[in-house]
Amino acid sequence: MGNMTVQQFQVGLSEKRTYMVDEIAEILHIGKASAYNLAKEGLFKTVRIGTAIRISKKSFDKWLDQQNS
Image: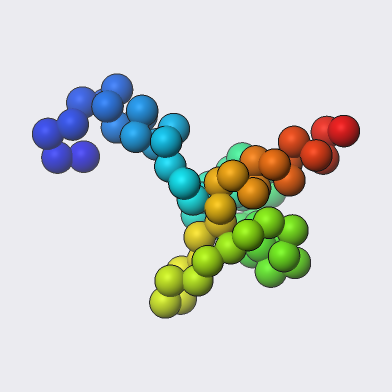
């Protein structure tokens, strides 16, 4: 966090453009393996950076909103 306050750090998180698989698992209250499976299904946009998978926040949030319809 460096010289940032907790509030500044939290604001920065709310402006993130991607989620990690662990965050998707936490948001959906599912296991990490299930979150990886969702990412692999192509239900939302993902980006691979080396071995890491990042999920587009915008496409994930849109997909999640459609699940409640």
